[in-house]
Image 1 (tube, helix red, strand yellow):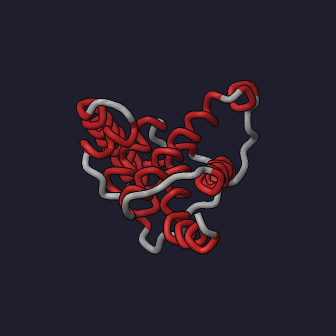
Image 2 (cartoon, one colour):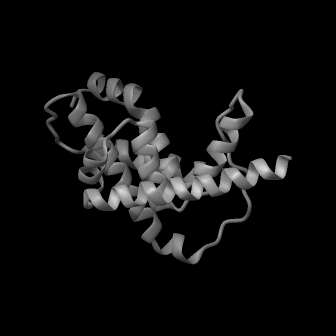
Length: 161
Protein backbone atom coordinates (compact mmCIF):
# COMPACT_ATOMS: atom_id res chain seq x y z
CA UNK A 1 0.00 0.00 0.00
CA UNK A 2 1.36 3.40 -0.94
CA UNK A 3 1.83 6.17 1.61
CA UNK A 4 -0.72 8.27 -0.25
CA UNK A 5 -3.36 5.50 -0.11
CA UNK A 6 -2.64 4.85 3.58
CA UNK A 7 -2.98 8.57 4.41
CA UNK A 8 -6.25 8.73 2.48
CA UNK A 9 -7.68 5.76 4.38
CA UNK A 10 -6.56 7.16 7.74
CA UNK A 11 -8.04 10.55 6.92
CA UNK A 12 -11.32 9.05 5.82
CA UNK A 13 -11.80 6.37 8.50
CA UNK A 14 -9.91 7.51 11.62
CA UNK A 15 -13.04 9.09 13.09
CA UNK A 16 -15.13 5.94 12.58
CA UNK A 17 -12.42 3.70 14.04
CA UNK A 18 -12.07 6.01 17.05
CA UNK A 19 -15.83 6.14 17.69
CA UNK A 20 -16.12 2.34 17.51
CA UNK A 21 -13.14 1.93 19.85
CA UNK A 22 -14.48 4.53 22.27
CA UNK A 23 -17.92 2.98 22.32
CA UNK A 24 -16.36 -0.41 23.02
CA UNK A 25 -13.71 0.58 25.59
CA UNK A 26 -15.43 3.55 27.21
CA UNK A 27 -12.08 5.29 27.79
CA UNK A 28 -10.53 7.79 25.37
CA UNK A 29 -6.98 6.67 26.20
CA UNK A 30 -7.76 3.04 25.43
CA UNK A 31 -9.62 4.04 22.27
CA UNK A 32 -6.58 5.98 21.05
CA UNK A 33 -4.36 2.94 21.64
CA UNK A 34 -6.77 0.75 19.69
CA UNK A 35 -6.89 3.23 16.80
CA UNK A 36 -3.11 3.32 16.62
CA UNK A 37 -2.85 -0.48 16.65
CA UNK A 38 -5.57 -0.83 14.03
CA UNK A 39 -3.86 1.51 11.60
CA UNK A 40 -0.47 -0.10 12.27
CA UNK A 41 -2.00 -3.42 11.19
CA UNK A 42 -3.29 -1.74 8.05
CA UNK A 43 0.13 -0.25 7.32
CA UNK A 44 2.15 -3.41 7.98
CA UNK A 45 -0.31 -5.83 6.40
CA UNK A 46 -0.26 -6.66 2.73
CA UNK A 47 -3.98 -6.52 2.06
CA UNK A 48 -5.96 -5.90 -1.09
CA UNK A 49 -9.40 -4.35 -0.72
CA UNK A 50 -12.24 -4.73 -3.20
CA UNK A 51 -13.90 -1.39 -2.49
CA UNK A 52 -14.47 1.29 0.16
CA UNK A 53 -17.05 -0.79 2.06
CA UNK A 54 -14.53 -3.63 2.30
CA UNK A 55 -11.98 -1.23 3.82
CA UNK A 56 -14.56 0.11 6.29
CA UNK A 57 -15.68 -3.37 7.36
CA UNK A 58 -12.10 -4.57 7.73
CA UNK A 59 -11.18 -1.59 9.89
CA UNK A 60 -14.22 -2.06 12.13
CA UNK A 61 -13.54 -5.79 12.48
CA UNK A 62 -9.89 -5.20 13.39
CA UNK A 63 -10.93 -2.45 15.83
CA UNK A 64 -13.35 -4.79 17.59
CA UNK A 65 -10.68 -7.51 17.72
CA UNK A 66 -8.17 -5.07 19.20
CA UNK A 67 -10.71 -3.94 21.80
CA UNK A 68 -11.30 -7.56 22.75
CA UNK A 69 -7.54 -8.11 23.00
CA UNK A 70 -7.27 -5.05 25.22
CA UNK A 71 -9.97 -6.38 27.56
CA UNK A 72 -8.28 -9.76 27.84
CA UNK A 73 -4.75 -8.44 28.36
CA UNK A 74 -2.91 -9.11 31.62
CA UNK A 75 -2.55 -5.39 32.30
CA UNK A 76 -6.26 -4.68 31.87
CA UNK A 77 -7.30 -7.59 34.09
CA UNK A 78 -4.91 -6.72 36.91
CA UNK A 79 -4.72 -2.92 37.00
CA UNK A 80 -7.49 -0.58 38.05
CA UNK A 81 -7.66 2.92 36.63
CA UNK A 82 -8.04 5.90 38.86
CA UNK A 83 -10.75 8.35 37.92
CA UNK A 84 -9.31 9.97 34.82
CA UNK A 85 -11.54 12.63 33.33
CA UNK A 86 -12.80 11.48 29.96
CA UNK A 87 -12.96 13.82 27.03
CA UNK A 88 -16.47 13.72 25.69
CA UNK A 89 -17.99 15.16 22.57
CA UNK A 90 -19.60 18.56 22.98
CA UNK A 91 -23.36 18.61 22.57
CA UNK A 92 -25.40 21.75 22.15
CA UNK A 93 -28.63 20.04 23.21
CA UNK A 94 -28.78 18.85 26.82
CA UNK A 95 -30.90 15.79 25.93
CA UNK A 96 -28.23 14.50 23.55
CA UNK A 97 -25.63 14.81 26.28
CA UNK A 98 -27.85 12.71 28.54
CA UNK A 99 -28.26 10.18 25.76
CA UNK A 100 -24.49 10.01 25.17
CA UNK A 101 -23.88 9.43 28.88
CA UNK A 102 -26.57 6.74 28.96
CA UNK A 103 -25.06 4.95 25.94
CA UNK A 104 -21.57 5.13 27.49
CA UNK A 105 -22.98 3.59 30.71
CA UNK A 106 -24.21 0.53 28.83
CA UNK A 107 -22.23 -2.71 29.12
CA UNK A 108 -19.58 -2.95 26.37
CA UNK A 109 -21.42 -5.79 24.59
CA UNK A 110 -24.51 -3.64 24.20
CA UNK A 111 -22.65 -0.39 23.60
CA UNK A 112 -20.83 -1.62 20.49
CA UNK A 113 -24.02 -3.01 18.96
CA UNK A 114 -25.88 0.26 19.62
CA UNK A 115 -23.03 2.24 18.09
CA UNK A 116 -22.84 0.16 14.94
CA UNK A 117 -26.63 0.10 14.52
CA UNK A 118 -27.50 3.74 15.26
CA UNK A 119 -24.32 5.68 14.51
CA UNK A 120 -22.75 3.67 11.68
CA UNK A 121 -26.08 2.60 10.12
CA UNK A 122 -25.33 -1.11 9.91
CA UNK A 123 -28.19 -3.60 9.90
CA UNK A 124 -28.38 -6.33 12.51
CA UNK A 125 -27.32 -8.83 9.84
CA UNK A 126 -24.24 -6.75 8.95
CA UNK A 127 -23.36 -6.28 12.63
CA UNK A 128 -23.62 -10.04 13.16
CA UNK A 129 -21.13 -10.60 10.34
CA UNK A 130 -18.76 -7.91 11.66
CA UNK A 131 -18.80 -9.21 15.23
CA UNK A 132 -18.92 -12.91 14.32
CA UNK A 133 -22.14 -13.63 16.17
CA UNK A 134 -25.65 -14.70 15.31
CA UNK A 135 -28.11 -12.10 14.11
CA UNK A 136 -30.49 -13.09 16.90
CA UNK A 137 -27.77 -12.24 19.43
CA UNK A 138 -27.38 -8.78 17.91
CA UNK A 139 -31.13 -8.18 18.08
CA UNK A 140 -31.25 -9.40 21.68
CA UNK A 141 -28.44 -7.02 22.64
CA UNK A 142 -30.23 -4.15 20.91
CA UNK A 143 -33.43 -4.91 22.81
CA UNK A 144 -31.53 -5.09 26.12
CA UNK A 145 -29.70 -1.86 25.34
CA UNK A 146 -32.92 -0.04 24.50
CA UNK A 147 -34.47 -1.27 27.74
CA UNK A 148 -31.46 -0.10 29.76
CA UNK A 149 -31.41 3.25 27.96
CA UNK A 150 -35.12 3.77 28.57
CA UNK A 151 -34.59 3.01 32.26
CA UNK A 152 -31.53 5.25 32.61
CA UNK A 153 -33.05 8.17 30.73
CA UNK A 154 -36.32 7.89 32.63
CA UNK A 155 -34.40 8.09 35.93
CA UNK A 156 -32.40 11.07 34.67
CA UNK A 157 -35.53 12.92 33.61
CA UNK A 158 -37.29 12.13 36.89
CA UNK A 159 -34.31 13.52 38.82
CA UNK A 160 -34.65 16.81 36.96
CA UNK A 161 -38.28 17.29 38.00
